[in-house]
Length: 183
Ligand code: ATP
Ligand code: MG
Image (cartoon, rainbow, N blue to C red; front, side, top):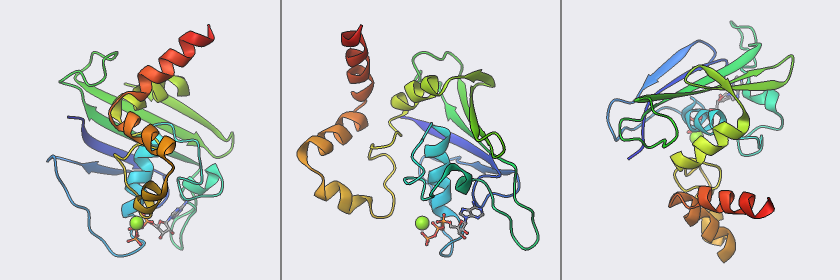
C-alpha cells in the first residue's frame, strides 16, 4: 500500500511558516475548526503531484495557492511542497530509492512551477507519470474532497469508469497505449 510519510510545506496557502506533517501510522485523523487548513493539506498533495487546475485547488489562478499574508506576516514570494513517500515495496517502479521525495515550487514573480524528484529537477510530465502510480491523481477516488461524493454519484457511466480505471492503476497503461498508437 502507498504510504505518504511526510508533507513539508512553506508558503502554500495557509502554511505561511515551514511546516512538517509526519504521518507515522497508516490511519490518522486531522481535526480542527472550520477554515483552519484541513482541506489545504489534501490540496497540497494534489498540487505537488502536478495539479494544473486552479479550480480543483479552490482558487481562481495559481497565485491563490501562495500564502497571501496576514496581519502579522507578509505575503510569500513562492510556495513549495514536498511529499515524502515510502518506496520500500517499489510502488514507484521506475524509482529505485526507498524514500521518494516529490517537490513542487511555484514562484509568484515568474509564475512558473519547478518540479523535483529526489531533489533532481524534472519535467511536469515526469511528475504526472509518477502521480499515476500513486493513484492520487485528479479524478481518482483516493482523495475525496467535500462535495465529491455527489459529483461521483451523478457522473455519467464513462466518467465513472475513468475514475475506477485510475483508482485501479489502469490509467497509466491507457495513457501509454494512446501514446504508442499516436507514434
Ligand atoms: P472546513 O472545516 O470548513 O472544511 P478546513 O479546515 O478544511 O475548513 P481549509 O479550506 O483547508 O479549511 O482552509 C481555509 C483557510 O485557508 C482559510 O482561512 C483561508 O483564508 C486560508 N487560505 C487559503 N488560501 C490562502 C492563501 N493563499 N493565503 C493565506 N491563507 C489562505
Ligand atoms: Mg475543508
